[in-house]
Amino acid sequence: MSDTIEKIKCLIIGSGPAGYTAAIYAARADMKPIIYTGMQMGGQLTTTTEVDNFPGYPNGTDGTAMMEDLKNQAERFGTQVRFGMITKVELNKEVGGIHKVIVDQTKHIEAQTIIISTGATAKYLGIESEQRLIGGGVSACATCDGFFYKGQEVVVVGAGDTAAEEATYLANICSKVTILVRRDVMRASKAMQHRVNKTKNIEVLYNTEIDEVLGKNVVEGVRIINNQTKETSIINVTGVFIAIGHTPNTDLFKGVLEMDDTGYLITKGKTTKTNLPGVFACGDVQDKDYRQAVTAAGTGCMAALDAERYLGSLE
Ligand code: NDP
Image (cartoon, rainbow, N blue to C red; front, side, top):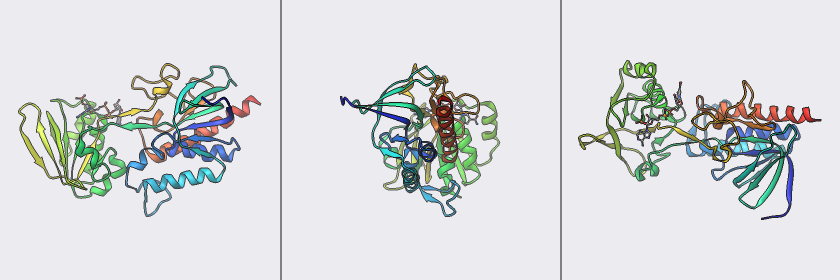
């Protein structure tokens, strides 16, 4: 354990669009932010290929390249971007109190403000063929990648609101969408199920799971299995959208910060304030409804402004 404690104004945890945007604003406000990237530098967007829906890129861009641009922009104004994981936090409950964190179990930092942008992680099935084809036709985000399957057949795995929403979104773009539901019912709200049922090019297969995603470098189909009859069959699709939920990356803050019953951080009203003074949350870690790069970036900006105002109120 290192003995020296680094004292800073603003620590940002997580390097997706929310974290980097917070860093751009915080750095320009002279808060000298330090951002710890986490293990997946650049966040979820680095697992997607093209990004066509982030304003300002008329010809689209590559997810990894876009995150590199955001990083460079944050660094241009003096943000220190460091690779590392925050492994422990000791958050102060008092207004003006100092928050303590440990990085990679060795380095101590004391920060006046903390901006949490640790994001959420899409859940996957975990089978080998699915993992191998992520980015090659397997995706966890229809809004990000659906466009690339225009006029083609795809499957959506899942039975909640996300699966229903993604399927109806894809039905507008794709020739056919098959939803694979592992039980004999969907968990999605009645309204969402109604939308699914009245969409002509969506078919729902119940008691059905993916046995294997077919294809070497790109998806060529899926072998499905009826978990009641054990019958298998093949559907020729080019896209596989996994919509079985997300896990917010909030383990570090359990029992300390207020969360909803699924672990997302709760922010106050229209702000990014958590229940502790000087601690702010932005991006997917506090948003399970929109989950877009542009909305994450918007809340990143808000978090930096909230942090700046908080520091100003202490003077
Ligand atoms: P949910 O946790 O609600 O649903 C996940 C679904 O995935 C479940 O139906 C589950 O099946 C299925 N599933 C889980 N693991 C597997 C697996 N290994 N194989 C096959 N299927 C699997 O997640 P959502 O992302 O759908 O929703 C999260 C929250 O966000 C919910 O509260 C939802 O209401 C909300 N939301 C709201 C929206 C809106 O209001 N517009 C839009 C999107 C989300 P099973 O049912 O068998 O457990």
